[in-house]
Length: 436
Image (tube, rainbow, N blue to C red):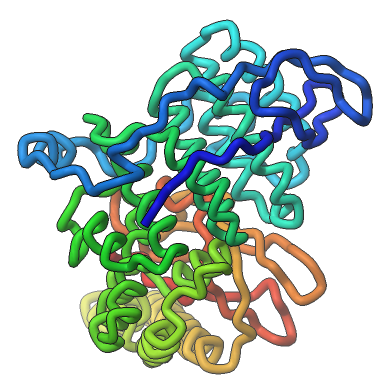
């Protein structure tokens, strides 16, 4: 296997008209082909190539791995300044142009060495790249990442952009550009995020080249064999499963896919990396098993069962009141138990009906893809607001689900699978089991 650094051009976002432009690798002063705005780009020809990443698998120092394992695996939360500008933890629908304007401001501040602005720039670049509205514009998303790489102040911020650029190049089968970005990455960093980006980028490129054994060596034979951030762990699992499938063990590959938090992750990864044709045989086997589990009667769900039991208990609770209030007028003795009974059995009936409806949707609902926009606590569960990729275009809907404590905010921006009622697409349930 031979890696090379290609003398390719680069892309950037015009500071004047927000368009994606091409420029030479040596940078310097450039002018937008559309609006004529001038911009200065740094010279990339002298960026050192990380031979440790390109030519061999560096030995994993046990002490360094122990150091990585104690670091938080969850993504960094958006800084308060960015949350204030965006009005939440993600780019709200309809505010894309405002977010791009904020991005331009953050880039300018980052180029002056503002670390805080560089942190916000890194976060916002990732949020913009995941927007459904950006899916038809991959060149613009790559230009965002390239410009964020040029402006980033800290090494981990640059590494994150390179990881995205490697995956984008591999996804369209552009080996030369993937190798170039991979060569600029830092290997053996003491930061979990940087290490995870390097491992998955190298494994993704190795998979493109057909070197699945190298991919497996980079990611480990099983989940948690090497420390990995939560954001990149699903990608690692799919690449690991694909490696086993290519080596001839489809059963093990399908079992590894069960490491994924939910079914939609596999589709999301394969859509991002179409050139790799990942898990062609093990994927359908895993999907069939996961769908079968999701089709279990919803009446067995804890939420439904508890609702029925609590409702019946409340309904029966009114009976002792009839006998305990013998000195009261008969009408009082009858009204109180009646109120308890009606209320209790109404709750039980509602819970049972809700469970039956969910079971019907799991079997007969229209399967769609949705992205989580926000999550908030609602009574004893969480209320999810999602943007659904509907048959007539995207729309917003809500559903309730149980989520482990502390997990809710980390789900924002995640793509999931849902089932929608054919006669009312806004009535839906999630096919995702969030209790992982």
